[in-house]
Length: 315
Ligand SMILES: NC(=O)c1ccc[n+]([C@@H]2O[C@H](COP(=O)([O-])OP(=O)(O)OC[C@H]3O[C@@H](n4cnc5c(N)ncnc54)[C@H](O)[C@@H]3O)[C@@H](O)[C@H]2O)c1
Image (cartoon, rainbow, N blue to C red; front, top):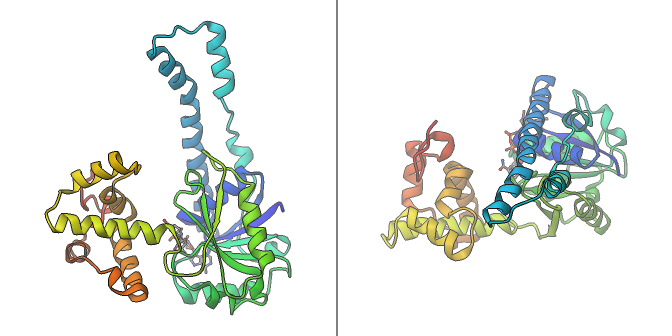
């Protein structure tokens, strides 16, 4: 498998395209128009430029770390560290793997298409229907949806057995997990192929990791994380501890990289609120919407992007 198509060049589509290009795939990137597809390409350039600057700092960081331990390195040892840790990130070479396109004809010989368009069931259903005219019989058609029905999308596609969810995490170039979620129509062959593709890939930090899950709201990660944020808000509402203490406790006591309040602000409290509403519909009272969260969303305290959420941020 060497060629893939990505539909939707926004936050997720462009960064998923970057990860595939980084792994040597040729990627066709399609959005509603060429300007938006090119915006996606610019985002890929930004991701790679940041990555390159980060990688360039690694040898010096390692040398400083060792010298801090009181060890004096020889010139030869410093050269070895530089040689081993310096990676030449060939930005243009990687970007050349991604071709912005403005129609679906180019997708007739790709092996996999991943859609990352707006999170609206009708838009995705329409897209699956339209793609029936362009994709070949063997192409796998995957959705990156976080919450919508793949079984419904699949019913609009000419070969429902070729569809499934491949749920990447934001941003996929540092978070290696992909949840593989079949529609009830998906064939085992489709699921196994998708699993295999991810198992062989790397992102900027790690090997990519697929896990299989059944189609139920939130799959694995979001279902657990939202419950953690939900419980953290309840703890603050009950005056058991303030936000800062809860975040410190979860980082230092449970090894979380971010506390639940920091995470809520990072994701966006409007999104946390919408997901909680969906989970409340599906799972009932296990996911109630805290009064405080509802009021914060009404007030526009949506987290990092608004400059204010559980914490304040400089804009
Ligand atoms: N943002 C996240 O943290 C995250 C994480 C995992 C999954 N997802 C899922 O990924 C998908 C995309 O999310 P995003 O955050 O990248 O959204 P986004 O708004 O940044 O990007 C969506 C892109 O899709 C394009 N688009 C919309 N309709 C289209 C169509 N019919 N044809 C072609 N392009 C179209 C838009 O122009 C836009 O560029 C959603 O299904 C979302 O649930 C998002």
